[in-house]
Every structure is written in structure tokens, then in C-alpha cells.
Length: 235
Length: 235
Image (cartoon, rainbow over all chains, first blue to last red; front, side):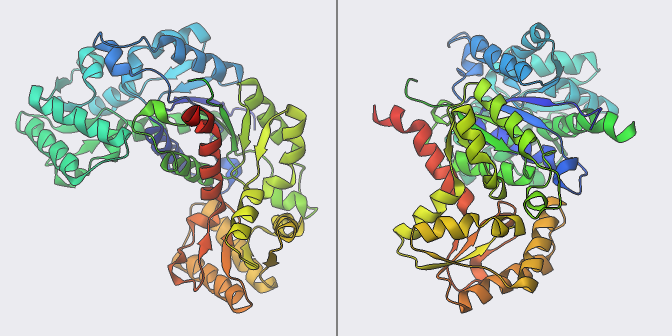
């Protein structure tokens, strides 16, 4: 069992997205019995104040809640940190560093994947907080990829769909709205659509979008599974 | 936020079953935003030695692994303990008591639900370890419910299906086998079929079984959601 690293998941933001991420982590692990899977500890506190509201200047700072989670994961023996909430990445790099945990950034993993595919422009569907903080725009720029974001009415439709997932009330109209916004980004030159909010993955079917849809949660799961088990598998 | 109790989930046995349980916990919570959901910490260590093998006398004792998880959950501030692995209930009541955590037993919750429905005989699909330890037979007897178990060839088919879920390789033949075993229990007088192994739920479609199929994982999720949020909702 040496070489296996305990993965901490700072989740609950929202809980359905964390369930989805955990499921992907299991799927992305080539195990034939329980014992071959990635050991994880999930801190799933959904009471963290809204990350997007805080970034837009209108809400409580989530930092103390996030710090409590990071510290609990460190305390539990985790070495690697994964956060299946894109917006929270405006806060967590500093907290991971404080705690001495290795953060696998969902945003970096996605930017790398886009660059590795030779993509030069990607459409970003994300919370208004993620866009306002420039999380994807800045990361993608470092990899030579342009970020194409929805216009204001489009962004309102994206936020409505995210809210619908969080309230458990996604309707066909939300799915259609996301597809229309995604198509408009493709029309403006996006070679990929990035569902850069872990809730959006649960409300979007890529089959009606003319370019491939990239799921950062799956990319993160794949990377984390490799990191956690890699040393054990190879050594 | 006072009155909300942090729920510890001792999971990873197997991981896909824990994902399923976490999803049901989210579904069974009537929340309209992230912040209304149940705060959980999931200890998901899939390296716990096989519970069933140990109970049948042929495998390593999982107790030290389970104790480590229970202690980590206690340390993280959990008050309530849920374990989405039926077989592990041969070990966890003592560990929960040691740690001062309130265990919500998946087996007790199921026995109560059967009795509340006036059921007098229930078919139990479970691991050989769960059956050998008499976990359901004893609990159901206390509620006046008879447990009907598969015969030996049937039990081999149940174990094959559980193994298929754990290895990610469920095939239609496994589903058909489970349905046939379930039907044979109904023929012998079972008024309900209890999928008393959290992996079985992932391999069984109740629509071809002549009596209702009861999912202990969902009953546990519902009870835990009520306990965690109950005080906050009512007080």
C-alpha cells in the first residue's frame, strides 16, 4: 500500500456536484476490486457562503469555512487536495499552501488539456464570480488559449441554470438555454466549450453543441486518480 | 445554523456504493440551495480488508481500518455516523460506541421500515458475510419479520453480481441472475426483497421482481437527512 496518497476533497459546493465528481473519480480508476480504488476523505460542508456572491462584492467571505475544511482534511492525513468547485479556486490556492497540501487545480488541469489539444480559443460557461475573478481567462492566457465568455444576457441564462441545479429543479428550458449560449460561443470562434462550473455538467447535454464540450470535473478526477495511485502502480 | 449535526460517513466499501449513498443523501434532502443540505464528512478508504471474507473466517480483520476511519470522523467533528456497507455492520456498532458517535444502523432502519409496513417475511439479498453473521436475520426477528435467504446456488449468483459491481463489470447476465434469485425468494413467501448490500442496488432493477424491492441505502439516507437537519428545521 506504500506510495498511495490520501486525497482530500473539499466539496459540498454544491453537494450534487461533489457526488458527480466522486463518481467520476471511481470511474476514472482502473480497479477490479474495492482495494484498488483511490482513498479519499471528502469534506462536504454545503454551508460555505456563496463563492460567486462574495467575489462580486455582495456576500460573506467564504474563506473561514474553506480554511476549516482544508485544515480538517490535512488533519485527517490527506496530502493531495481536489476541489470540485471552480469558483472556490479564487480562494483555495492560498489555503492549500498554508496547510501544506498539494492542490490539483481544476482550472490548471483544464488549461493544460486545452493546450495539449492545440485549442486556441475556448468558450467558458462559468459562474459570474469565476468570470469576474478571471480564473479561466488568466489561466488560459498563460497557455496561449483565448477565453470567450457569454454576453450579459447569456450569462444571466447560465446563472439561472446553475441555480436550478442547486435547487434540484433543472427543466428542459435550462438545458436549451445552455445549448444556445454554448452555440453562440462556438459562433464566435470557440473550438471547445468548457463547462467550468461543476453544476453545469449536470444540466448540459453536449450532443446539441457543434464543438466538443470539455468537463473539468472529469479531467480533475482523472488527474487525481493518477496522482494518488501512480506511485503505487509504477513502483 | 445551530441544531445542524455534522454527519460522518464511513464509506469506500465499495466506493461506487458510497457515491450512490451520497447521491441519495442529496436527493432525500429538501433543499433549495447549497446551504440547506446536510454537512457530511466522508471517510472513503477502499483499502479496508474484505468484510465478508473476514466474517467467513478466511480474511484479515478489517477492525483496525474501520477504527481509524471512525476516529478520523470523530476528530473532524462528526456526531452522527452512517456506514453505507451492510457487511461492515458486523464490526461498526462497537467502534461507534468507543468513539462516542451515534450510529444510524442501515440494518435497524430497514427492519423498522419492514415492520412499519406490516411485512411478515422479507427476502434478503446480501453478502455471505452478512448472512453468516446473521445481521438481518437477528434484527428482523426482533421486529417479528422472518428473513428468507437464497439457497446455496442462489447465494453464489448473488456474490458474483456483487463482485461484478466492485470490478465495474456488471453484465445483463448478473442482473437476470439477481432477478431470478429474488423471484425464488418471493415464491418462498417473501413480501419484500431487501437489497441488503449497497453494491446490489447498482446491479438490480426491481421492475422484473413480483414484490416491492426495498433499498436500505435510501432508507439510511432519508433517516440521516432527517436527523442531521431535523433540529434545525423544527427549532
